[in-house]
Image (tube, rainbow over all chains, first blue to last red; front, top):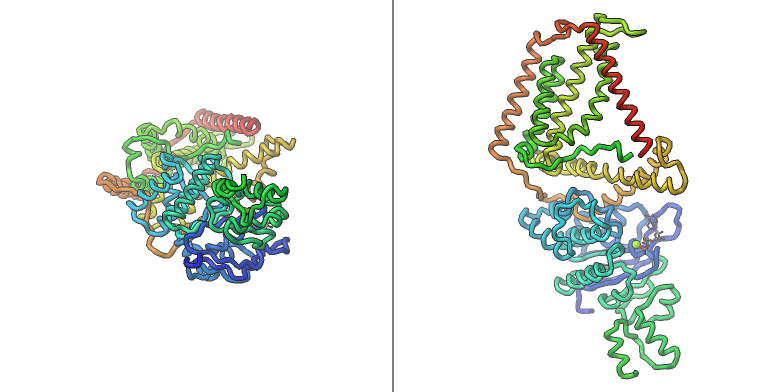
Length: 287
Length: 296
Ligand SMILES: Nc1ncnc2c1ncn2[C@@H]1O[C@H](COP(=O)(O)OP(=O)(O)OP(=O)(O)O)[C@@H](O)[C@H]1O
Ligand SMILES: [Mg+2]
């Protein structure tokens, strides 16, 4: 990945929300993300995934109270002194509570909101609305009230609203928590497609390890506000013991490879396979 | 609680009034507002109210209008009761008839009727405008004539927040019921308010973050997704909206012969019937309102 351009750089970032909690939500984060990478953030509840994501468009430290240390540089902009609304030109955010993001009378107007602020023409807006609704599978709901949608539909709408602004970076916080299994597949596929075809950088916090292992270029494992592992899925999931100790799940095939080794049934070299296809490829010789 | 809340929003339809641009409608409503405040003449206010009612029938919003009027009218009836014994009118007052410890005054009856008509005229016209215009179109057209974008947004958001808060209120009430707390009647309403308002603050904070993240408040040129057109007929309606209510307002201010507060004389029988009727009408409403609140 060294040929790619670094676009997001966290340099020694620590953030305290303040209040009763004396421990920082994220601590001494150093992380470089390159253009076009698909990054998966893994970690238990409270690990700091959301907090880290909020730093990318500068909501932290600009809009959320707390104590901020370090530096986040996104496309050359220091988030500390760039207004969030300026960052919005290249960072699209999909938050984890979609029903709290809505404000407009219709789905179409909800999607148009960001484009209006960026000065898109009327024709561009109608075209884009159709496009993004198609992408997230909500065509035909243009005139419905966003508040009358199901949780999963609201989550899709929230993705559509972010996509409509044509961001270079798409930050998604558990974007499929309310979506049904088929919908999950669709949304992950959409993210993957945008990533592959439009070279969009995707930073996704997710608990679905299997899918992340398949789609992500980079997996970042967080624990109690710190980054413990950062690398390709194969590299990261080869740290079986650490991942177990953190209480995180692993892709089943990786777990399987590890067990085979432990039981001396095979000797599979690290990095372990992380997807079904690569596992089949690797196990072919042994079994 | 839900049972008492009457939404005042657009009633879909395709009448001429529905198809009008919201601006002339707003101007007419403002004009009628100015006219209503400029006179106490019962005939003028009555005619304004009647024309408003005709527009209600004409635009096919009668059902929705009646639902609101059923609440508004009985409450406004108290004006007659209160005014008749304590007129908002310069003294001296002319007594018509004694009524237990109270005296009903000529000026009070006149003032009560004209205040009632004034309220009904203004609200009827306002409801015609609101119920025949898409809220987004109202805001978009206001934006066009220079209302700030942010103000515009606040209106839209408030409009959205009301039903959300209503439904959250219902959720909290039910949650309290399921924890064996008092879940109905007025005793339950107060403790439910707290979580609803805490939730509302949280919601507003989240929303402001989401809006910023969608470039809301950017410095550059903004565009508008909703398009509201001004047709020729809209310009005519707009022009008439300046002319007609404007001229009428001028007339009622200038023409002193329109002061009927003493030339219109009410008989004691009429006065007592009117006041009793108004009071009973209001009490019946209160009875049903309390019953609805307790059973919700
Ligand atoms: N608004 C807030 N105020 C105070 N503390 C907070 C706030 N938001 C998060 N925290 C704390 O910061 C830490 C990190 O939280 P964060 O939301 O970033 O975790 P997460 O990895 O996104 O968890 P989840 O998987 O539950 O979404 C937690 O200890 C949490 O309690
Ligand atoms: Mg989170």
